[in-house]
Each structure stands twice: as C-alpha cells, then as structure tokens.
Image 1 (cartoon, rainbow, N blue to C red):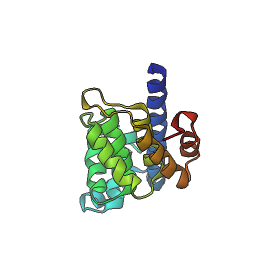
Image 2 (cartoon, rainbow, N blue to C red):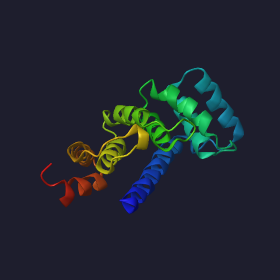
Image 3 (cartoon, helix red, strand yellow):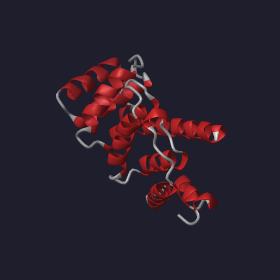
Image 4 (cartoon, rainbow, N blue to C red):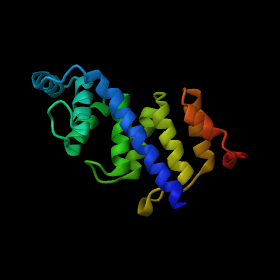
Length: 175
C-alpha cells in the first residue's frame, strides 16, 4: 500500500507538471520581464486568461518571477472561479498537495471535479486515482473502486491512455 501511495504521489506530480507546462506554453513567449508586467496588468484587470497564465508563472517560478505557491494559488483561484479549466485542475492539485494553500482534500476534489466536468481527462484521471487509492488521513476519502472506475472510464473516453489502462485493470473487474 505504501508503494502504491508513493506511485500515486509520483503520478500526481507528473500530472501537475504536465498541467503547469500546458498552461505555461501559453506564456512561453513571455520571457521578457516587461511581458510579465503586461500579463500582471491584464490579470489585475480581471482577464481570466492572464490570471491563469500569471498563476502558472508563479507556480513554476519562470520568466524572472520567483516561485511563489501562495501567489500562484491566488491567481489560479481567480481564474478557476471564472471556469478556467487548467486553473481548476492545477488549483485542485495544489490543494491535494498543500502547496500555497492548506492541504484540503474536499477543496482538491471540488476543483478537480469542476475541471473534470469540462472533459479534462487529466483531472478525471487524478480523481479516479484518488478514489482508487483512498486518501486523506483525517479528511478521509474512502477507497471507492466503483467511483474510481467511472472516472477512469470517463478519462479514457476523453483520450487518456493511462485512464484506459486503469479502467481495464483486473482489480476493477466487477465494479
């Protein structure tokens, strides 16, 4: 079980990194500090795209900006509350890992589900994994293989190869 949890944590980190890089690709031409200042101005004006980009810049510590999970959470939450799918996923991962926010599994699931409901296969995969493992210590998320299988199926149908592999797992037969 410990090895399974370590594998789960490792996979979540890979998913978080891929989410962060997918959004940071939108800002890849923004390496000039003046561009980051323009992004910040647009984010402060409430432009959801730039709120998300600024959150990812803080999350990764890129483009001359120091890594700051608290600032990342602030900007990602602003974008996530406006329905920005990548921000919802990354914010969910931040709550899951306790980065820039207090670790809170119910908030993690809330944001991941919002993203998953917009057909984000990675968020669906993470949710499936959470229920597959059971997670949460005092905030116990009980293992629920039926829910896990449904999330893996949905992730698979949205193009996730890993979701397909897990959906077909022998452990999930009969659920």
